[in-house]
Image (cartoon, rainbow, N blue to C red; front, side):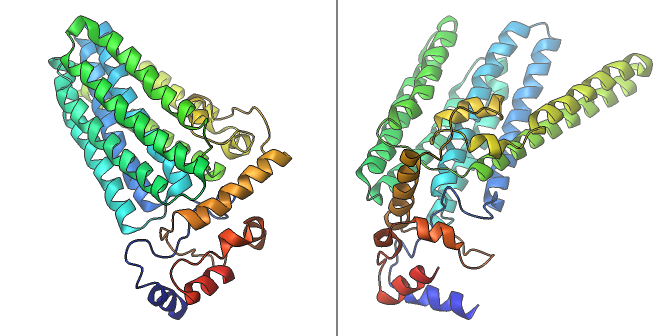
Length: 363
């Protein structure tokens, strides 16, 4: 505790960006934070709202329209969640500003959830669009903040490309609100492809770092929450069928089949540790598109000489660049191999005073 107080006092004069503890791709004991778990729970509220409206649409014999609306709403939820998850894996420092901007994204998804019913019933996507824009503009701010404190030119360009690409897409999404109803599926298709192309364009300048075990845990937790919502919805449906129609003999086979599907989905998703396969992936967000549907993807090993050079350079750049305070490591000093891998100039770069520099060198 005394050491923690001394470390805070030595950097107290740096009011904007205190001493950094930026997450590294090989950081030990990296796990999902309470803020990330809260983030997931709020996003699943929106997923549950979309699922409930899809059920009503199918029950009213509007399956085609319901599936189309569900696809548009779910894409907005999924893509905003995934973009934040990969950003956080590389740049989560857990300081006050980072937390506030993340909470703004949570507010955005709740706004989106409030407009789901209106989108399904009245085909009015204005509230959904506003909620999505709130989430995406908050992420643009986070990318610009990362770019501002990046010392590596390639990393700075990558962050700016992410911010610019996401911002331009929000202008394009306005067409989903203004276009006539028959044209909206085509607007959605074009803009979804545009959103998916932003990471491919941004990471041509440089690759973002991410923690394989952290990413695997985040996807796994979100999958578990969605599966839990599925079980809860099925339970309510079976209960309603029993109370209103007294059809237990007809519902039991359907309920058993649905439960087996949920069990099978869990089994297939977690049968192989995803982080082992993610370690074989090239750096960057584009692999995330494949990882949601197939957590066992693998293409090439990142342990080659070129990859090691890029990983070392990225570690040093992030340690010196962001200078954003992350939570203190609860397990003590950082592992020696990781510290040795970072360039000496980056590891000992002075944040604000000689005492801070000596503290960071020891850690």
